[in-house]
Length: 147
Image (cartoon, rainbow, N blue to C red; front, side, top):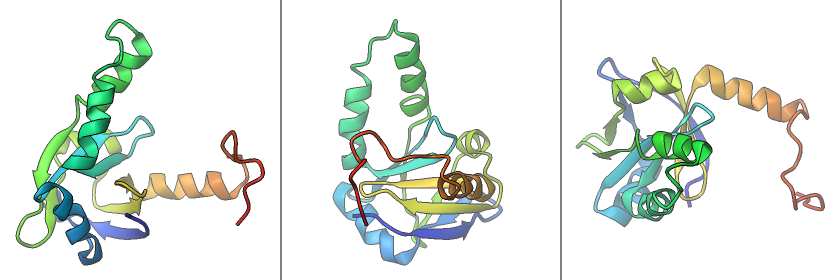
Protein backbone atom coordinates (compact mmCIF):
# COMPACT_ATOMS: atom_id res chain seq x y z
CA UNK A 1 0.00 0.00 0.00
CA UNK A 2 1.66 3.19 -1.18
CA UNK A 3 0.61 6.16 0.91
CA UNK A 4 2.00 9.46 2.06
CA UNK A 5 3.36 12.51 0.27
CA UNK A 6 6.94 13.71 -0.07
CA UNK A 7 8.40 16.81 -1.68
CA UNK A 8 11.40 15.76 -3.76
CA UNK A 9 13.95 17.47 -5.99
CA UNK A 10 15.15 16.25 -9.35
CA UNK A 11 18.88 16.37 -9.98
CA UNK A 12 20.36 18.10 -13.02
CA UNK A 13 19.93 14.93 -15.12
CA UNK A 14 16.23 14.65 -14.29
CA UNK A 15 16.60 11.83 -11.75
CA UNK A 16 14.30 11.58 -8.76
CA UNK A 17 15.33 9.77 -5.57
CA UNK A 18 12.50 7.54 -4.41
CA UNK A 19 12.09 7.80 -0.63
CA UNK A 20 13.82 4.87 1.10
CA UNK A 21 10.59 3.76 2.79
CA UNK A 22 9.03 3.06 -0.64
CA UNK A 23 11.92 1.49 -2.54
CA UNK A 24 11.33 -2.12 -1.53
CA UNK A 25 7.58 -1.84 -2.11
CA UNK A 26 8.11 -0.49 -5.60
CA UNK A 27 10.87 -2.92 -6.53
CA UNK A 28 9.72 -6.21 -5.00
CA UNK A 29 6.52 -6.93 -6.98
CA UNK A 30 8.20 -6.69 -10.40
CA UNK A 31 11.86 -7.56 -9.94
CA UNK A 32 12.64 -3.84 -9.76
CA UNK A 33 10.82 -2.83 -12.94
CA UNK A 34 8.70 0.31 -12.78
CA UNK A 35 6.48 2.08 -15.28
CA UNK A 36 6.15 5.84 -15.56
CA UNK A 37 3.37 7.30 -17.67
CA UNK A 38 1.23 10.41 -18.14
CA UNK A 39 -2.12 11.09 -16.47
CA UNK A 40 -4.79 13.26 -18.14
CA UNK A 41 -4.81 15.66 -15.16
CA UNK A 42 -1.20 16.65 -15.88
CA UNK A 43 0.72 14.53 -13.41
CA UNK A 44 2.77 11.38 -13.88
CA UNK A 45 1.98 7.91 -12.60
CA UNK A 46 4.56 5.44 -11.25
CA UNK A 47 3.59 1.77 -10.95
CA UNK A 48 5.48 -1.42 -10.22
CA UNK A 49 5.35 -3.23 -13.58
CA UNK A 50 3.11 -6.00 -12.20
CA UNK A 51 0.51 -3.42 -11.08
CA UNK A 52 0.69 -1.57 -14.40
CA UNK A 53 0.25 -4.56 -16.72
CA UNK A 54 -3.46 -5.20 -15.96
CA UNK A 55 -4.21 -1.50 -16.46
CA UNK A 56 -2.31 -1.42 -19.74
CA UNK A 57 -4.10 -4.58 -20.90
CA UNK A 58 -7.48 -3.03 -20.13
CA UNK A 59 -6.61 0.25 -21.87
CA UNK A 60 -5.57 -1.72 -24.95
CA UNK A 61 -9.16 -3.04 -25.21
CA UNK A 62 -10.53 0.49 -25.64
CA UNK A 63 -12.10 0.97 -29.08
CA UNK A 64 -9.56 2.58 -31.38
CA UNK A 65 -12.14 4.61 -33.32
CA UNK A 66 -13.60 6.24 -30.21
CA UNK A 67 -12.00 9.69 -29.81
CA UNK A 68 -12.11 9.76 -26.00
CA UNK A 69 -10.75 6.23 -25.69
CA UNK A 70 -7.98 7.07 -28.15
CA UNK A 71 -6.89 10.06 -26.09
CA UNK A 72 -6.64 7.91 -22.96
CA UNK A 73 -4.72 5.25 -24.87
CA UNK A 74 -2.33 7.85 -26.33
CA UNK A 75 -1.57 9.24 -22.89
CA UNK A 76 -1.45 6.10 -20.79
CA UNK A 77 0.18 3.70 -23.23
CA UNK A 78 1.86 6.21 -25.52
CA UNK A 79 3.85 7.83 -22.72
CA UNK A 80 4.51 4.58 -20.76
CA UNK A 81 8.19 3.92 -20.09
CA UNK A 82 9.81 1.03 -18.21
CA UNK A 83 12.49 1.91 -15.70
CA UNK A 84 14.47 0.40 -12.85
CA UNK A 85 15.76 2.19 -9.79
CA UNK A 86 19.50 2.76 -10.02
CA UNK A 87 21.88 1.72 -7.24
CA UNK A 88 21.06 4.93 -5.35
CA UNK A 89 17.28 4.46 -5.52
CA UNK A 90 16.80 7.02 -8.28
CA UNK A 91 14.65 6.90 -11.38
CA UNK A 92 15.25 8.99 -14.48
CA UNK A 93 12.17 10.93 -15.58
CA UNK A 94 12.49 11.40 -19.33
CA UNK A 95 12.43 14.88 -20.87
CA UNK A 96 9.13 14.00 -22.59
CA UNK A 97 7.40 13.11 -19.33
CA UNK A 98 8.92 16.12 -17.53
CA UNK A 99 7.63 18.39 -20.29
CA UNK A 100 4.16 16.81 -20.18
CA UNK A 101 3.85 17.35 -16.41
CA UNK A 102 5.65 20.71 -16.31
CA UNK A 103 8.29 19.27 -14.01
CA UNK A 104 11.54 21.17 -13.65
CA UNK A 105 12.98 20.73 -10.16
CA UNK A 106 10.50 20.26 -7.29
CA UNK A 107 7.92 17.48 -7.35
CA UNK A 108 5.36 16.01 -4.99
CA UNK A 109 5.46 12.21 -4.76
CA UNK A 110 1.98 11.16 -3.62
CA UNK A 111 0.93 7.62 -2.71
CA UNK A 112 -2.30 6.33 -4.24
CA UNK A 113 -2.45 2.78 -2.89
CA UNK A 114 -1.20 0.75 -5.87
CA UNK A 115 0.94 3.49 -7.38
CA UNK A 116 2.32 6.99 -6.96
CA UNK A 117 1.44 10.27 -8.61
CA UNK A 118 4.29 12.65 -9.39
CA UNK A 119 3.19 16.29 -9.57
CA UNK A 120 4.86 19.55 -10.43
CA UNK A 121 4.96 21.12 -6.94
CA UNK A 122 3.00 24.20 -8.05
CA UNK A 123 0.31 22.11 -9.75
CA UNK A 124 0.04 20.01 -6.58
CA UNK A 125 -0.58 23.14 -4.51
CA UNK A 126 -3.39 24.10 -6.91
CA UNK A 127 -4.90 20.61 -6.46
CA UNK A 128 -4.83 21.03 -2.67
CA UNK A 129 -6.33 24.51 -2.86
CA UNK A 130 -9.20 23.21 -5.02
CA UNK A 131 -9.82 20.34 -2.62
CA UNK A 132 -9.74 22.42 0.55
CA UNK A 133 -11.88 25.21 -0.93
CA UNK A 134 -14.81 22.84 -1.21
CA UNK A 135 -14.88 23.23 -5.01
CA UNK A 136 -14.42 19.49 -5.32
CA UNK A 137 -17.28 17.57 -3.73
CA UNK A 138 -17.37 13.93 -2.76
CA UNK A 139 -17.35 11.35 -5.53
CA UNK A 140 -20.70 9.77 -6.44
CA UNK A 141 -21.70 7.03 -4.03
CA UNK A 142 -19.76 8.46 -1.08
CA UNK A 143 -22.36 10.91 0.20
CA UNK A 144 -22.57 9.11 3.57
CA UNK A 145 -18.82 8.70 3.96
CA UNK A 146 -17.36 9.97 7.20
CA UNK A 147 -13.90 10.18 8.72
